Image (cartoon, rainbow, N blue to C red; front, top):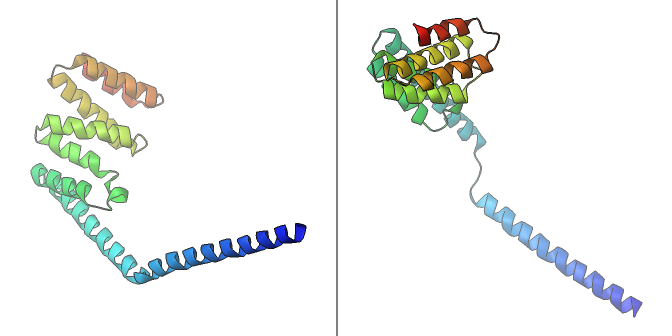
Amino acid sequence: TKTVLALVIAIATIFLVMIVIKWLKGSTELLTDTPLDFENQIKESKQQEQQLVTIANEGKLYAEQHNYESAASKYQELVNSPGSNNIVDSQRYYIAKSFFETGKYDDAMLHYKLFIQEKPNAQQQMVDTAYSDLASIYIKKGMTQEADDLVKDYKQKYPNSGYYATLATKLTG
């Protein structure tokens, strides 16, 4: 009986191994039906990255020329482009700044909030400007509690920054 049991276990094991091998072959055959072309994928990725850099540079150029409408449009195009995550990091700031400079305060407010949430460790000058402009928007809109909360948030996140005093004067000035 032990021999029969061992034989049954051996046959069951062989049968199970055959099923797994067939399953694996079927899975492998499915993968090889569509050949992977890494060279073309890398080339396409580099082209896409270059296109995104070009869009970002165009947006920056428009902003430097004080053509904030076109700058905001380019930055928005960049943010909406697939695969732009690595490049978009600071572009949200530039979108907000462009809207702020053209008086589109609701749009600027949205993008400054997103920038502050997404990039708390961005270049300090950009962070300071984002907080300052957002506080100005809140004050212009009569949203004094939001402005006060924003300044408190800044002090909590950046306790060693000398910019806090400047930001706080926006509330009293």
